[in-house]
Length: 284
Image 1 (spheres, rainbow, N blue to C red):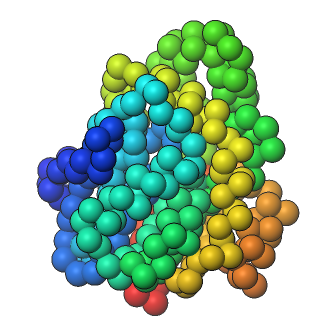
Image 2: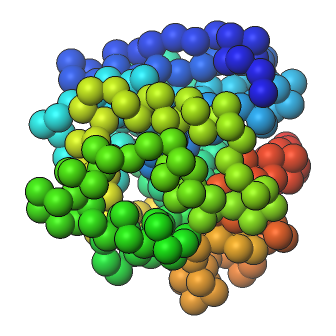
């Protein structure tokens, strides 16, 4: 695992008075923006950035409250909140002909941002979009027993805050393992960085607040019909979503089919980074 400084330049961007975004920039060419999922950060894409940077100017960002972007304990961390942040990031840097790539909630954001910035987005690659929860943390809770128990407790007033504060690197690793199929465990250095960032003051609020916004991710599907850019829809064979949920998203995107990555879990960019790189570079 390479250090971030070896694969790109780190910077911060103030997108408004309340939010500052940390991001990595690497490579040359048309812009490609990478959007991670909950409880992760831009390091999530470390295994694909070096190859992608040979073809694009890659921007990998920490979503608000995640990684080392700013934390606002008064914010409502739902889909619209994250969407406005990614939009502002693209607009502040004046990026055009953008390829938007995201996984999980990042996959949803890639779609909704494209719907609202039609003149700036060239293509969208949405991997395992997390747009199907019917109750608090439903998708994540499908991962394994510990994920089901812990995320379920997050929803309980007072108890949720206590349970979140008890998280350690072992528990985090077991929960994240529920999104892997090809790998037996999250790469230790990646896991250690997720754990380190998760200990920042205020992050436990962000984590629970993001899960509390679960309804917003399903509601975001109402924007899919507004997307003008071509969309590549990708699902891991062993993603948390079921067949019915995948087909509904494909239908809303007017897709007759989608790409399936065999023997891969929800965290595809870590489980099979080489396959995800191939998908992104397909018909570049």
